[in-house]
Amino acid sequence: MAPLLLQLAVLGAALAAVALILISFVAFITATEMPHLHRHEDEKFFLNARVQREALPSIRDSPTKQLSVVVPSYNEEKRLPVMMDEALGYLEERQKQDPTFTYEVIVVDDGSKDETSKVAFKYCQKYGSDKVRVITLVKNRGKGGAIRMVIPNFNIFI
Image (cartoon, rainbow, N blue to C red; front, side, top):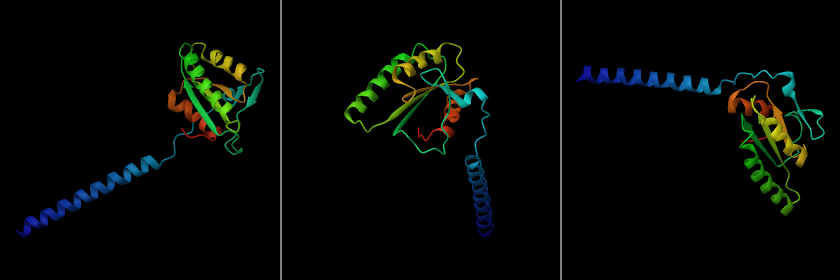
């Protein structure tokens, strides 16, 4: 009976040690900083409605909008207008009802091979670069990468 209890105690201690190692590993992986995305020089700017380059705001700047909507887009020239019309229609109506409400829509063209940036830029020209910004990434980084390229520059939560 005693050897069996001893074996169970050793087995329990071994399982606890393995669990502690796994928990430590998961904590290390999730707490590790994400890799730094190297930004191409052209990705530090956006074109305003007058087709002039403006530097992206810094995260150190005070927030100027109540709501920032990030739209990661890759080859979305055909689908983008439907989404933008609906979203901007709602946001404009909300702003009419509450003039203190402020927003911006940030379209991140994730290295598209189609005319996504041009389509998005038409909304920038229609609504102004204060409300619609288009950031064109030089290469495709995936949805998560596109969002991460914007997060350091804007005070947003997704």
